[in-house]
Amino acid sequence: MAVGKVSDANFEAEVLKATGPVVVDFWAEWCGPCRMIAPALEEIAGAMGDKVKIVKLNVDENPGVATKYGIMSIPTLMIFKNGDIADRQVGAAPKQKLEQWINKSV
Image 1 (cartoon, helix red, strand yellow):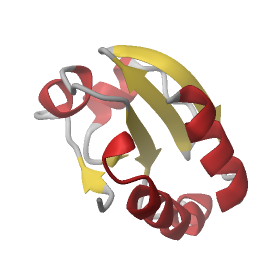
Image 2 (tube, one colour):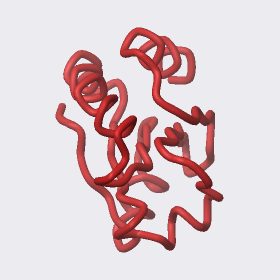
Image 3 (cartoon, helix red, strand yellow):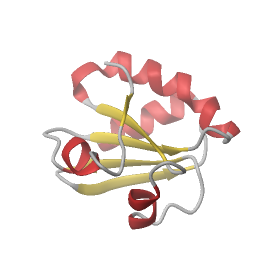
């Protein structure tokens, strides 16, 4: 499964009402560390398949959700389960660390 995109408009339907765990990558086009972890997230999404859904939310284009969840720096990754935040990771990390973090929380 590839990394999807969400927006202020579909965040509730795609993330909060999802049946399984969802990793949300809060990012922006101009953010170097955000671009650095993108390929790792794609690989993790492919490897984990239906076990977890991974989506990206551009904070510049979707300030509503970013403000609601208090995103102060990017990249910020959050894992949502049943509409609630299960875990949060701020800053870039190597693929192995991201994979461990996601596996621990899902």
